[in-house]
Amino acid sequence: MVKIISFLIKFLNIFNKLSFQFECFLMNFLPNDPSSIVNSVPYKRFNVDLVPVIKPESMPISLEKAIEEYKAKHNGKEPKPINRRIAIDFPKSTKCPHCGASHEYIFDNRSGKISKQLRCKICGTTFSPDKTYSQEIAHYCPYCGHKLTAVHDRSGYTVYKCQNPTCSLYKSNLKKLSKQQKKEYKINPSKFTLHYITRIFDGSIKQLENFTKTVRASKVELRNIRANRHTLGLILTYCINYGLSLRKTALILREVHDIKISHQTVANYAEAVSHLIEPWLDNYQYDCLSKDHCGDETYVKVKGKHAYVFFMCDSVSKIITSFNIFMKRDTFSAIQTFYAVIRKFKAIPEGFNIVVDGNPIYKAAQQYFQLNGINFDIHQVIGLKNQDETSKKHRPAKQIIERLNRTFQFSYYVKNGFSTVDKANEFMYLFTTYFNFLRNHKSLGYNPPIELNRFKDEVNMPKKWNMIIDMAYDYDIEQDMQF
Image (tube, rainbow, N blue to C red; front, side, top):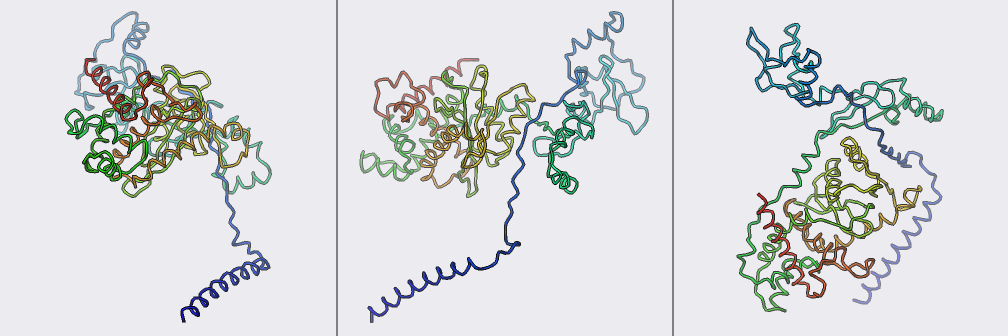
């Protein structure tokens, strides 16, 4: 009976395979349904135009310069505070957005009850107390000089567009369209980008610097732990270098080294080391960075949701220069990633370039830095095949960052996600320290990207980790002494 049942099961499996092959054979003779064909419309490539023009008279000046200009107009007389007959009805904290003069030099320039215009006595600027200076200044098209119009208010930036029909850029782009494209443009103008478009961002470089200075305090003080320094080095070696889970690390310490320690204590020690080396790694002075960098983003899970690791790596020395995790893959994340790389240079090298994928947020981030006077080139490698000369030329750099993603995923796989973004970034500091200072690279002659003098004659990995901890302690003491 058993043989009969097994024979029937084999027969049914063979019959299913034959029926599937016969079905596929019949599908070749069916007529194609045009409605079932999916036409994928290619994305428009994001291009960065010239930066907008801001009129010189709209730019802010110092109060001293404004007073000098006032004296020149009034035969050397000093500006005196306004002698008011009626009490002011605007806040005393109001200042001139152009020269910074206090409320004592600002008078009411309102012609009626509806208008809310004020005027500065020193520089003569008229402004509204209900608007910020960024709303007061005007941006102009660099091609035709026409005033730009705000068309979209996005999160973190505003999109401005030149709507002048006689703009030279608009005319040039319109001539490049074919007859069919011109018909499509009349039907669906949003499909084409013919006018000059720019983005004005809300954040400043100073805000980015403040973002990088946030250092979180650790719950565990490494000086007071019960385990010795060798055990601490073993924990970091197994967890970070070999990519083992917390429980496997605790199991190896107990069964191989006869050290009884819980997996939670392993996690606490790793967290404490991460908090200690965070300011040291962020401010480490790299002397061997090249002008060629590459970047990409990969995925991790935070509370079961996708988060994004933005990696930036030196294409020559293989040094990771940016590695933060964000919950959103947006322009502000790309801006912070680029800034983490830029701040590691004393001066941006000539011909500095970054190779990334086709995500438009990188081009938008490039435009942000252009508006702040920081210029570099972006090369986008799109797809798996070389469709253009840029992809063909810069494909090797893109492969470098993809190999970095693969190495990271090997270490991240056992983590099974993180509970918070801070926990995820703690792991990133440990992984980056290992990758930059401890991991041997075949392309570098089986040497780490950064060869420290302390490691010259040292092979033992736990000792190397303890040397890095000592360097982080020394940096922390130096910072405390600078007061």
